[in-house]
Image (cartoon, rainbow, N blue to C red; front, side):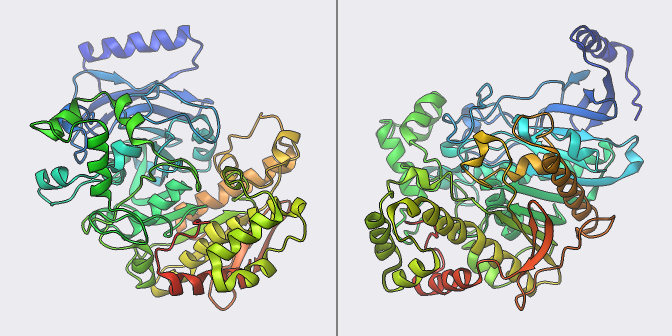
Length: 537
């Protein structure tokens, strides 16, 4: 892909090229023209061009804090996009140790493309990272898109505002908005990034008419919210939700639902905590506070059972018009092919957050949470002695918070013209450090991106499974169907069979995963209210 660069504009381009050469980089990718200006990038592995830290919106700082994302400012010359942008402000992560430089100037994205020219029009996959809407970044090392891009797709990973910066609401913020709402800034960032893809991805050889959104955990939750947001209509054409769905803590802007305070109330509490509530201009006082002070005062929760405020997408009547579960049940989600699933031990990292270690505590929790159905749940997830409690509790959380919501999403697609494909990831790597958690939450990501290669604890069977999953994900992105091209047969999910593909030591089609438990949890959701949190143990 060649771009004509004026002589003066080429000077910084040549300087960057020299710097990369000195650092041992193999090559510098040709400049690409965006709607905001020219950018340069690098080359990974000799055949995948990489562009990092591309601004897709203006820095949300100063007066732009707690406002919808604004257009990025154009630049002159060639902007070097060879380093990742900062991570959005966040606490230390619950899972993993990776944490990059933090800054509110974080609305950037990254592109990996194997395309040789703009005319290639390859499928595009836009990754929404997890982290409970509170931590994470699209530039985390296990989201490196090089290997996935080699399957013939353009990979985009993005940042979006997190925690109190991404999802804080306040009556005064709503008042200053022309829509009369506040919060959901992180969700609006995701929508802005998808808009950027529509305007610019063709320059990287991508097809703006064939865009897949995919994400894990909070990223999968975001995928589901985008599927029911009118603001995201037409911005994507397939969806993949890994270990996350429509259920969960769906806070409302002004209404208290299921013992959850409205988000405007949370905003008022934060303003009071920071002593900004009595200022002549409370919003100006809040916007003047260092982000570190806001993060400390907000106390964002991490994990399913973490203490503090659970930040995330808000039912505001605009970006998110109603409870996502109700919208999916009514068939009001985007009519696009859906690939959705869970991991066999999704619950293992989260049950460690709760002090349920004895048989007596386990049974007490079941009685408090499931009441008249406690004995039925105990039969489905039995423990006869204390030593059996951790495994039983982990299976219960896995089924209630991940497997049942995934089946719900797959079944809900019967109300549309599009098919759904259900999976269950069961592979446990042989490495000693990984065995104790089983097929834990987020493990499948390294297989999808191919970032487990060269890492200790994985063997050739893991590498083979990763190749299969990368091909299936890319095939789905290209066609809306993960079948063909020599891949294992993957039946579409129908309510009569609840067919799914097991991704484990063997890749095989099965049916009826946790059927009795999923039937019970669906029943309880209707009895207790659609928004009763499946993880409220």
